[in-house]
Image: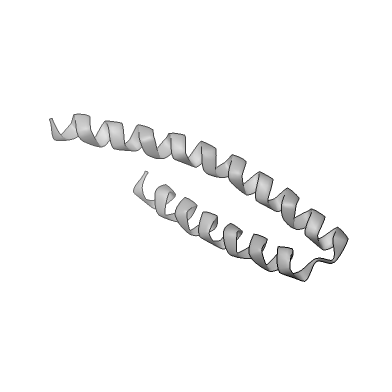
Length: 64
């Protein structure tokens, strides 16, 4: 039973990693736009979101 639960957790983690990659790509594109526009506020917000996404990705990768 424990193996079945672990298998489902691993599958959920892999799905979340795929979504995280898409979120990272979007946020990087947003950061690029902010850099082109020289919008410091938007750049700071993007960097903070990217850091949170990075931390979640590292955490999920260490579990899988």
